[in-house]
Length: 228
Ligand SMILES: CC(=O)N[C@H](C=O)[C@@H](O)[C@H](O)[C@H](O)COP(=O)(O)O
Image (cartoon, rainbow, N blue to C red; front, side, top):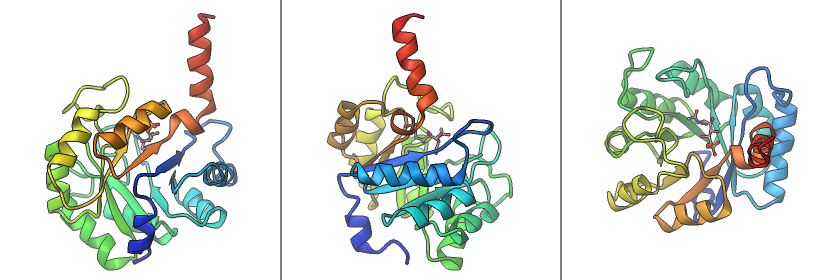
């Protein structure tokens, strides 16, 4: 088990920073993402989340905190670490936690979520974070044996509306559902107050991506506010 109980405990009530640059963007370079991850840790991040095998490797070298890794493939339907092959590759790259699509949708390799989770847990030392889009997803992901439940896909699967900030109602539902595993709030958390609200809604930890690590988006927010 790469993610010891102590390491998991070190994430309780804390901030996790997701550093991702998208295809074609200037910062899309594993070394850069490793530097961004290291900067986030200096700022107090308890863990980091990165996309792509090279970025997972770079983050493992750059920081001492737990690394959540994912492998995006495609844009539609199931694209976050969509298959067992992707999940095992992320684990082999060194992720402490493999984040994968935790929805009830059909997966491209035909494997069930339970089979995917079991493959990671039996063939690697990594834990599994199921990126869910609804309470029903989370129930199924807990049943499938996922170690952590994320709200990552809330507002992106059609099951829930895309809230302006985090989906606090879903976070409350997941906390109340007593799933027996940590609920990680992720998605559209853009301000410190929203991060606080996600914790207050019952999240174990909070992931912030865009608002900390995506300068093009942040710049756009300011530009829009100026109306220029
Ligand atoms: C839906 C999807 O593809 N989410 C991805 C998952 O890794 C990332 O693009 C997000 O940046 C990440 O979830 C953090 O969320 P936000 O950037 O809103 O703080």
